[in-house]
Image (cartoon, rainbow, N blue to C red):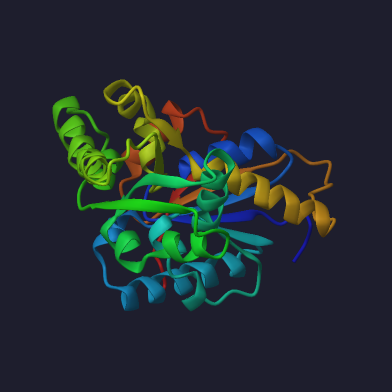
Length: 269
């Protein structure tokens, strides 16, 4: 592994772009290699055994291309971190999400919207218990919101209906416990793409984006291990996708990502 090697990112589609955007802004001297497995999106509807197989295959592919670390920019995969194998450091968006939760809440309940698989695997709850018992999540899984966002969220009515179906059960469960939910963790990296719409619908909710914490974890790792890229040549971001090329292209432009290349690829499995 070279200091100039790229930081790898994995997601089932364009959701991880929200993490990539933060990394590019705050660690602009690093190279990045993003793998979006849109052909098999949504990951949240797949069984754990298949997800572990896919995750390990993509990690192996990124390692073959010289990455110096891998960011699991996918909450579903992050909920299975202990089952993934890597020769380079792995960074979990769930760990980062818990850190961001604790930065704004030291007791009480926090809403959590995520994929069905993330909720089922209870990755956030398990990570949270390592730090405190004073904060709890009220988690709600959604079958469709991530895919609606990944497909371009052109129909605002459909998008809002999906957001409502994810958020309302959390607010109702909080009310039944006599508590008003004030904070909502966006437990899928696709969700910050529509953060503005969620905020418009629920202006009283404080939205928590794990990407902020993930960048801090990466920065800490690079600093403590003296692993910042110190090459003089311009930095690059390469993006690989197994499908939905046009959607990737559109989102790169919408988020104004620095991107040297966008290529279709096959996952050797």
